[in-house]
Image (cartoon, rainbow, N blue to C red; front, side):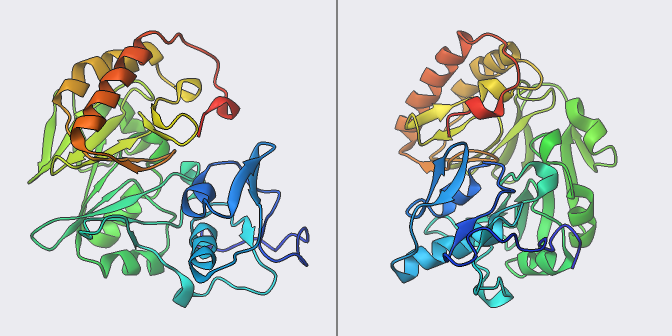
Length: 306
């Protein structure tokens, strides 16, 4: 097992109080996505607001614990053994999309996904933390043919997973220095077909080489270009964490949004959401209009509206 997967020594706080979140929490939101009934944001970090009262809530906490990139979701008596690991975790009833879990500290705790294809293979979108054991777990779902990177921040482990799977690694030329040995380089701003039913849409803004991947007219893997905010109950851009240009992001959305039709938004950071395609289209149009009004601002992770 790699050092990236191994947990640090358990802090003492909360040791006699059941489940707790230790001081290493970076407020990445992943725990609240997976355990919304028992973990909330308080004072700029995740907190366990009460102990689980049912088996589903206990499963939520285990999912959060296995996903947490700092291993901050802890219990003094409950150890994270492989038999309790729920990942890869199916997100839709048709079993097409799975959440990888095991988020990596080298990708700022971003979510990664597995996309099952009709011919019996899968694609990995962005990367979880690296370990050979995890690679075997993901590969057991179906052979992985492609590793699709949405942008530079999520490129860590991409080459290693691609080599382990014998898969092709994809990235946009704008972020090529983050994966200079990629097998396929997406260029320009025109859509690129990755495989049957899967298209890459370059979306410079969050980074110069940001890309979203659209699958089957249903699933939008948006990277960090936009996400579902539980605070506003709407699609949002992370304006305060835009490394390249919010003006370019607005232009990218204006160019690309009319071409997109999907039901699921599946971001790297922020909430996931399923809505009817017509409703998602309406909200994406409104997001495009709002983004045009935004001005550049200093990077501020605390200003993101999860």
